[in-house]
Image (cartoon, rainbow, N blue to C red; front, side, top):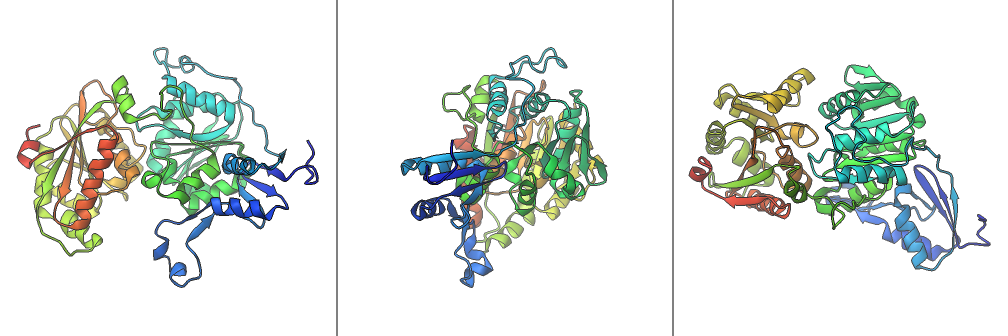
Length: 482
């Protein structure tokens, strides 16, 4: 096929990372530019916007150079064809081939003879083998680690692979999981652990230590992509020019219910479209579907009203401080609920001071926060996985919002919040099945003390109800006997 504009209206030069749209048709360039630009979240708080130096938009198509992120190729082609323009393709992407054409449910039985991969796990892996890029959208505790391991095992030996995540705890967990499947040449990179290898599991904060190696990476797998779209991770993606296989995983790939268009199109631009699965009619795997199958545990959610102190005029930050973190009546409620529970209980808090207070109030509770080292975190996580005694652990929400595998009987959200991805991820922490639990009891609060906190409480109820969880508003006395 000729690449000359004399024969075609448009030439698309496709690279692993950034593609180029060449045409003399200025109208289509303007259409694509207008179609692929979105207002940044909270743009109106930006100093440059207030000074009228920026209009608040982020452009995903450069109408001057014709450049755009290759993951947006389907959108660009669709718009071009809609305008009846002829396209010539100049595909310069590298071709990293998989070692297998497809997998089946028995793919990991070489190590665990009793393990049958679920149909959606097989489907997602086979789509990556076929398309070589995409976003795997699957609920928390759906077994994304098996998907990741299957993808890695499906690649030829000595393929340079980077497994990237935002948190050391998640990096350590993924490293141990991959190593456990007898996959050779697996290295780690976080904190003081600087042992890169052909396959490197890294925290994004430590990636500068192997910066010269990044262009040689052929496969990038990013876990919990919703947590990996700030400027730091994006600067890494831009350096992975040799990576033609690009995979992102998350239970909530798009933040704020897809309302953050900049985040959504950034994810798609770097990694490609969300992959649909044939295992469910809608194509999107849901928590409710996995609960109905018995893959995730059932859940019962209880929301308890908090009536004091009355803070009708506090701004949001002050309301969180006085109404949650420093609210002694609320602390007493959380304590009473926690000490009545049997089994493993996790309390999530937003502020260090809040966690400190609850830790002092609840004898023998475990308390883990951001400053704690990996050994402390591993100990708490192990206790939340294996303890046969009644156990109460307190943790800052950032540690347990994403990716950490624990087996809970109760989850108490004492951190508030309203963001869709955070609420879904938090609930997901407790949905893993274990032999000593029937369901998850989730406790949350309706803060009827401040307009902001009340609105957020209602938002949490709405999000969890839409996810298919059974939610009931109860008094404190009722919550103590459920």
